Every structure is written in structure tokens, then in C-alpha cells.
Image 1: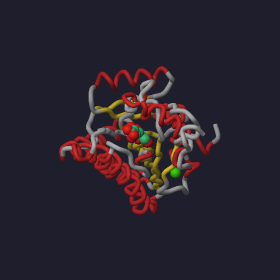
Image 2 (image 1 turned 60 degrees about the vertical axis):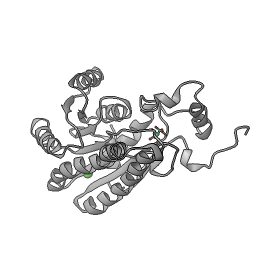
Image 3 (image 1 turned 90 degrees about the vertical axis):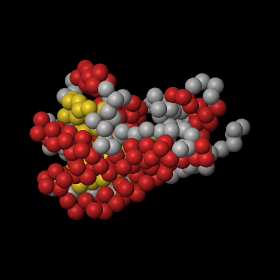
Amino acid sequence: MNQLFDLTGKVALITGGTHGLGMAMAMGLGKAGATLVINGHSSQEKIDKALEAYRAEGITAHGYLFDVTQEAAVIDNVARIESEVGPIDILVNNAGIIKRIPLVEMSVEEWDQVIRTDLTGVFIMSKHVVKGMMERGSGKIINICSMMSELGRNTVGAYAAAKGGLKMLTQNMATEWAKHNIQVNGIGPGYFATSQTAPIRVDGHPFNDFIIQRTPAGRWGDPEDLAGTAVFLAAPASDFINGQVIYVDGGILATIGRPANE
Ligand code: GCO
Ligand code: CA
């Protein structure tokens, strides 16, 4: 394989790598040669099922059950991973949640939960993984952003605040850590067919038609569409790229959209 995109011998930790976009990106990293470590927080069963899926593809994968918002658990599990699997070369901060509630109806508890998972969780994870990267003088951190890092949408205010914040956190991490040969970049997925978007993707749902109409490519993203960008940002090919968010969106951010009859 071209060395620019070769991840052989690298350890990649993907939070929320049990399903959806996290799994699709992790599959890409694994097929490029990385040893995978996936994190999940809901159940060991879900992790085991995911590990089976990776192993069925011939990918070496390990699973760890912990919550990225709990600092003590993060410290403990990062240490376990580094001693049981090896130093973490690549961290993909993918774990996230969404709540679709208008801001005037949203409780502070609901708001806090979204910010805590989607923004604070990335800070906690990165803070504890980057220390080893600094000592070794290399590392790749990929933060999973969103269309909502750039655009607003009714009902997703807390998510947009977190994902907009995550874009700036990405720039700030790059600012502080680039001198250690650590690259911190983001991926901003457009609208993808996953369980997260299932409630708004059902046939006949006005949002389903809206997204297809609003996306120049004329379709929802397939999770596999993200794998190439994940590999690129994890590989030597991107060693001088820092603090950028690459949007994988079928062209959504390139355009204002078009009238329904055009
Ligand atoms: C929504 C969607 C989005 C996407 C994605 C867009 O309700 O608008 O769920 O938030 O999941 O993050 O990039
Ligand atoms: Ca490197």
C-alpha cells in the first residue's frame, strides 16, 4: 500500500465505535492497517457485537466500556489501553448525542447533557490521550464535527452550540499541540443514513425530501463515504494539515440551495 496512507502498526482509538459513522470510519482505519480500540458506554454486549463485525473483516480490534464524560474513568481506561494494546497513535473523538428540542422548551439538564457529551467529552478524552502523544512526539486527533458546526437548524440548538464549539476546540488544540508533531483536525459529516438520523429520514417525512433536495449530490451520505477522509487525516499524507475541518457533505455547504421546482 502507498505509505502515505498506510496505518500498519498504529493503534487507533475510536470513541463510540460500536455502530454508525464511528464504525464506518473505524473500518476504514482498520483496513488501512491500524489496530482498533473502540469505546462504548452503554453495554458490553454492544461492544462485543461490534468487535465481531471488525474481526469478520480481518481487523484486530479491542473494546473498552467507559463514559467519555467521566474523567476518572477516562484516565483509568486510557492507561489500561496503553498498557494492554499499546500507545494510542490516533484518537477519533466520535461519541456524541443529539436532542431535537426547541430551545425555549429545553431544560438546562438536557442542554448540559448535550454539551457535556459532544464538547466536554472531547476535551476530557483528548487531554488524557495527548499526554502520551506529546511524549512520543507524534499523534493524530480527529474530532467529528457536523453541518451544525457551520449552520443552525430548528430544534438542535444545544447540538449546534457543541459542534460549533468543537470546531474552535479543534483549532485551539492544533494551536497548542502542533509543535509536538500532533495534528488535530475535524471531519464534518453532512446528512448520513445512520440510526441518529433515522427519525428524520423515514420515507414521506418532509425532512427526508428536504435533505435530498438541499444536497447537491442529491442523496443521503452512506457511512462508508467517510472512511477515506478518516484514513487521510490519520495517515502521514496529512502531516502538515492542522486545525482544519473537512466537510464530507455532498456539497451542502457549497450552496445556498435551490427552489423546489428547479
Ligand atoms: C439534524 C441531524 C444533524 C446531523 C449531522 C449533520 O437533526 O439536523 O441529526 O444534526 O446528524 O450532525 O451534520
Ligand atoms: Ca506522523
